[in-house]
Image (cartoon, rainbow, N blue to C red; front, side, top):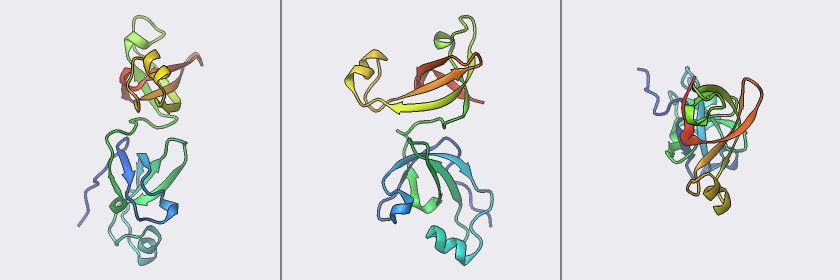
Length: 152
């Protein structure tokens, strides 16, 4: 029997506590990949500290690093960012450098708003995310997450 994935790409997750440091306990991340083949051997199960049949995800942290981790070590974290580094997305018309249409851009970095000055500048709340994007003309801009329409 195939187990249904609890998470999909771009879901915000948090690593459960009480795990070895290699799993980055209590850190938030975003799901960037799902292994289509569940754990099938005892050796794999031991490596991921899980049962045979468990699904393994690739998750990315805000510093750009990533790990593979079993589903049973993850919990939902809807407050985490929605898009990964390198992902192509569409920004809304009101923020696009092309005044009459939405624009396709690539995400090259992101930052969590932690200071009042930046929050005020972008009219955002603390802990919101702002993305560094690059358009087709290689122009780099900062875009609040709320101005991204969808991923491609």
